[in-house]
Image (cartoon, rainbow, N blue to C red):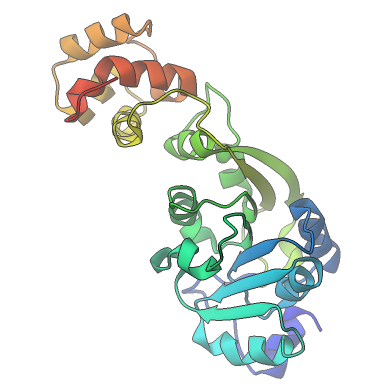
Length: 280
């Protein structure tokens, strides 16, 4: 039974407050499973288990599934739908308040994330997972198409989110999903992205906190030139910032969205002492 049928059976309505849009297209669900390249040795963390339609397929393909669902109304549905599976751990809670290492609870440090993320927590969930001490090996995520395009952007169209995700992993937009594949249909097109996490950052950064403090400052006023956005964000005179950018070989008239990760690393090395810590 698909998600719409299960909700009707349990006399439940999707919660607008929780941003619930349940994926009902079986072919799309199977494409998501294929994209995760699961094996019987894999541990999967699912965020937003919903009524278990994706969870079932995950449990058939992976060795173990840890399924997290915030909506307590759906827990009885999940317990009923998944009753025949012994390899599923069901947790009611907010993923943003949960430690992935505690959820996975295994000596094996490798796990994958598969999720149909509520759109309103996408950015926060990405940061939470990628900045965790125990990072996923890869993530296959259903997100708003616009967010998928932002995550996979190249220099010229970069954003704070793109820099953050690409610092920790390699994102790819795999395929789009039309609104009609969901119940209720969202007002926007969706897309599935896969992020394969790096074993080491792709750029040499001495202090990640300093790196992201400078990147955030750069994007704080993204329409302004770097000398002005960084000056405002770091609380330093534009002349000092411009000199630091010149030292890094960066034109101070450029804008934050134009810079690559390697260029941000050079900016960090040059301006690191401006951020409250010594730079590299």
